[in-house]
Length: 474
Image (cartoon, rainbow, N blue to C red; front, side):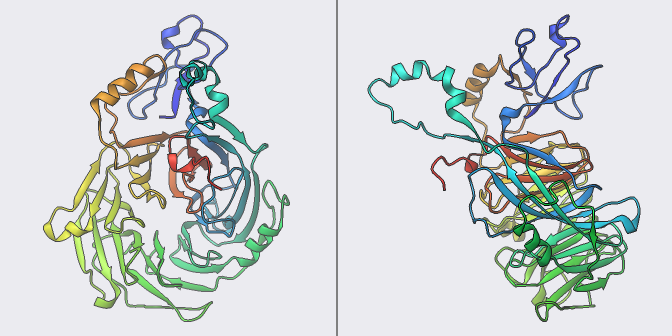
C-alpha cells in the first residue's frame, strides 16, 4: 500500500482530518497515523491529495515520450542476464495513440541512470557476544545502515521514432531477436519491423537526445498483413524463432511462419472457434506448437497447430470479457486471466479434464483488468493492472497467519491504518498513474516493473520484493 492522503491546509487546526504518507516524516505538526487510500472506497475531501510513500520503493521513476502509449515491450539486452546493481539501463519499444493517424510513431528508447536504493538483507557484521548491546542502538541507525542510494542524478531518456500510420494497439518484441518487433495497427494491419539500426545507435550514444528526439525516421516494415478487422492479440513463440500468432476482433487467429530472416508466410486460413473478439494470445512456454487465447465471449481456448484450425480445448473462464492472459514461464501448468468485471483467476491446466481448473480467484479490483503478467523470477508472483488506476503485485504462496498479522498490526498501529479486508496474497499496491494500460516485468532485472498509462510510463521496484535485494549479488 503505497499511497495515502494528506491535507496540509487542515493539518494545524483539525488533526483528525490530516493523513500523511505511510511511514513518512514531517517537520510541521505532530505525527498522525497514515491512512491507506483505496480507490472506489475512499473519497478525497476538499484540499486533500494523494501522497506517495517513497520508502515503499527501491526505485520509482516516471517519464513520457509524447503521445500516450497503449502498449509497449521491454527489449532484452546484452548488459547482463541478472542485474541487481544500480544504476540500471533499460531498452523499450512503444507505440503511440496520437490524435491524428499520421502523427503516430513507434518509439525505440533507452532509459539509463535509473537510480535507487539497496537494502541489506543480513547485517554486514556478524553478531558477537555483545549483540544485545549492539541491538539497543540499532533502531536509530537503521535507515542509514539498511538503505543506501545507489547512483545519482535523474534518469536519461534517449529516443528514436519511426513513423507509423495509425494508432498502435499492441506491440511485441521477439525474445530471441529483440530488434524484430510486431505491431498491431488500428486499421487492421499487423506489421513486422527491424529496429536494429536504431538500437545500435542508442547503444553507442551516451547522452545524445536525452529528452527525446524531434526527428521521425521513415522506414518500411519487413512484412505487412491485413486482418479482416483490427485487433489487439499478438505473441511471439519463445521456443521457435520467428513464429507468431495474431488475433483480431472478428475472432480470427492467424499463424505466421518465418521463411527467412526477413520474410514470413502468413497462413490465410485462420484458427476459428471464438464467438467474439480475440483479446489476447499466449504461446506455451514449453510446447512449441501450443498457444492459448482469450475472448470477449468469456472463454479461453487452447490450440495445437498440429491439430488443424479448431481448438484442442475451450472452456468458460469468466462471466464477462476476458481481456488478458499470462502463461507462467516458471510453472507452465499455470495460466492467469483478467476479466472486464475486475476479477482475475489462476488455473491449473492439468485439471482441465476434471472440469474445475481454477485454483485461485480474486475480486479485489472493481474495474476492468487491463494487463496481467507472471514474474520471470518468482513462480508464485504476478502483477495486475486495472482501470481503477491500481497496479497490484500478488504472491500466491502467501497465506493468512492470524498470529503474525496481529503482531504486525500491534507494531504498526501508530504508523499505518491499513484496511482490514485486504487479501493475504496482496503484496504491493502502486498508484498515481491515470488509465493504466499495460505492465511488464523486466526479465533481466529482478523486481523491476514498467507500466504505461494515459499520463506516461512508470519504472518501479517495490522494496518488499525480496528477490531484488541480494546484498552479495554481482
